[in-house]
Image (cartoon, rainbow, N blue to C red; front, side, top):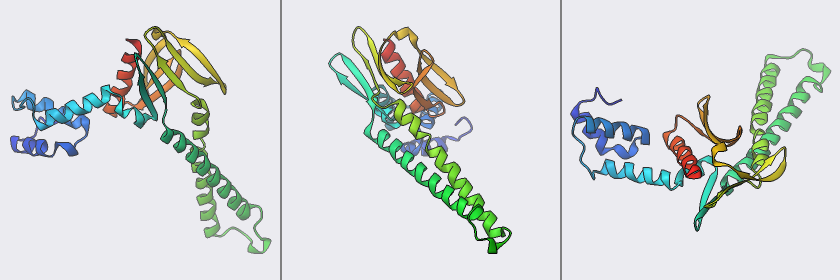
Length: 223
């Protein structure tokens, strides 16, 4: 990524490394090492080390809508309050958009006064706008499934066993989980932690912090 950069350009990037993504910081670090320019304990090294520690401590798990709490020699993973509120907000907004768009669409296409005659260009444009509004509302309503799927969700591990509480067909079930039944699956730009084919958490595979967080969690569960 930085192989074609001149030394001066690399040093300028080092000075402003905090504005770079974590992925770019890693590339810059590797390029400096390849040229024998990186000093151990540099500000860039410290930033990378801090982010790596935050990943291992699951600080970024909240970006996926979950949190991990250590309880003695065990830990438990649950949904964050923000994630639950986000799903609820999306459901309400989706419902309002869909209903509003549907009612306005009916008022134009079905209940429009006959004296107005054929649709004008303005009417056609409004039909398109309200139609798009309905589609956007329906997409927001996808949060309904996620909300109910993870209502009461808990994934915990003690020294002896892994326990999962999750809704399957709306029924909240508690299951003992074999570590060997956990899988990491990559598809369509996503990385998902799965249990016997059932998705538990997923991340954007192109976001290295999310990807490393999922991988770190997978290793922690299987260790």
